[in-house]
Image 1 (cartoon, rainbow, N blue to C red):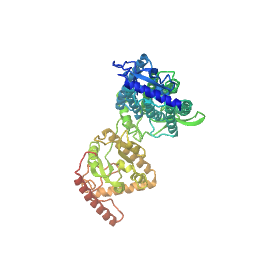
Image 2 (cartoon, rainbow, N blue to C red):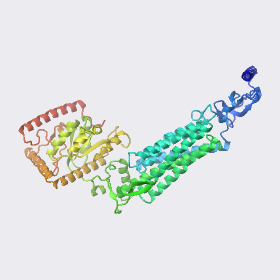
Image 3 (spheres, rainbow, N blue to C red):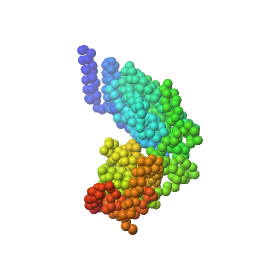
Image 4 (cartoon, rainbow, N blue to C red):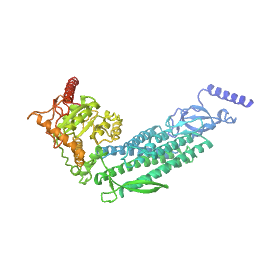
Length: 629
């Protein structure tokens, strides 16, 4: 009690003396020195206790700190840990130099990614990590020790929160990139989840250790090491599997370099924590920044460029040799794993995989064109049944018919114009809604069939028995979609539905590529011919086909010579496509396919007439816009 009263008396005396003085006895009118350190108490030039007013001498654990601006503060001596110097001037210059170098590498990497996006392909992971790193370094250069980039805690610790926050944003994405090292898969397995959980746990425990003092710091540090070891273990399994998956030679060298960069950089972080201001304090903040920046460049910019380059080389391998893989069994950390290795066409154990999922990726199309321009023999086709003609770039198409399943008429004129530019006449039959599309497919089957049904992405959302795709598959019909985009939900929706193909666009004012449309039509016609050829080997299918041919011929005999067919759903003349060889003829406007029942013919004709009138009315209300929404 007496000690507390004495402390209060001394503190009151000190404050009265300070207030009663003509001015601050430590006031300095000169501008702050470059050697001072910015803190929440100003730019400090004196870090030792000042006993001028007797508080420190009295042993009560308080002292004064002096600011270059002459401001004084009373601070507990136990909370002065963060007032230590950040390092020498030479270390500060080295830290800023390294930070500007890291910033320059991010700019150069982003420029390279932009160029490769145009010429080849670029994944989202490397671009995202590079952008976050660029923003972090830029903030760090000017505000590394300002709040909230640095947090000054009541425990006496100061924490570089900007560094840990950036790790939380980028390290999980790096591991996502690692788990899909080939860039060909869009799904992630259990190992991906383990990598993410262990990495996030490692960072969280690490930043917690930086914020605590005493024995708790080392408990949290040990927990971080435990989580980090789990990350290292599963990452090693991914590297070993990836090494045996990619083509032999140059690609495997890239995987080794990626592993070296990964483990060298990620091992530096716990060591720097241990020696730096967050741990034992054997290294200044500036020196910690220098070495951490080097590790960041190695683990993000350089590793990302290597991962990007590996994906490009794998894509080139597929374009040259095709997607040919050999399945082998190997032991990874005591676990037997089945690995599919990319091999050349000469490998007798190789199995060719369909490239239908890659056929409509714009990146593959651009890469193939650029490789051909450089004189590289792109022998393998992104096939899905295109065959050798497509490999030579010659994509012949014939007169045909496409059913366009859309929720409204706004897209019909646009696709009609695009199909009219193809070298062969293609009849476009619009279908509004699921029931109308199924009905038209059934009617087209009686008249020789159609090449495929092109559906709006909205119809892909329902994968139940009542969904359009399911019903069309039950009818044995080829199904494609438009609206694919390299990024976004539409890509995942379209690629996950097991379609026969798709078109990129139209969306947001951009149209579809004429070459892609031509290739898609040619591929569907090839698949249709293959299906018909397979049906001829089946007596039941042959009987069904002969019935369709009979219906088609019967209709053609009823149609007057020189009469153009009218599309009842579109309300205008058709493209004038001549009858396809052994297949589709234009769907007539007022004539329905033969039916065993005359009443059935009358009912179908009446329904078509009503539908034609309704579509004509809708088109007049919509104004017949040819611009895609």
